[in-house]
Image (cartoon, rainbow, N blue to C red):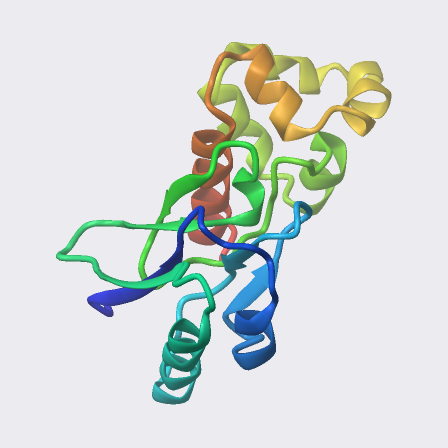
Length: 168
């Protein structure tokens, strides 16, 4: 496990410099802010991420040490809440807060049992009629509000589950 990673703080102005320099590691979210899409996985990516950090006009990119802990990065799934935790090296983001429940469960059917374990309210997905209708329109951010769970925690846990259990 790498002991360093990068994060983008709330000072990001959305200039896209980091995305242009290291597109494999930085992306833009729906609100025009950059986020760490993937922690560098090799020396070349690390060099590009460092170059992006040095060229950031507002010093929004920071290199941080994990010290065996998780590194906080700005991630697209968590636009509404700002900084959230993600593992180093960052796991892929399979699901975002805006994704619809039905579409996600169609893609990752094993996720259904996990969601039910998170909250009994997710048992509604077992009702075929609700699944085919309501779940087509309900996103995870709305579901998180319904079950009183912070959306960033829910999405983080879902992405970890998919990474670990679905072999992605």
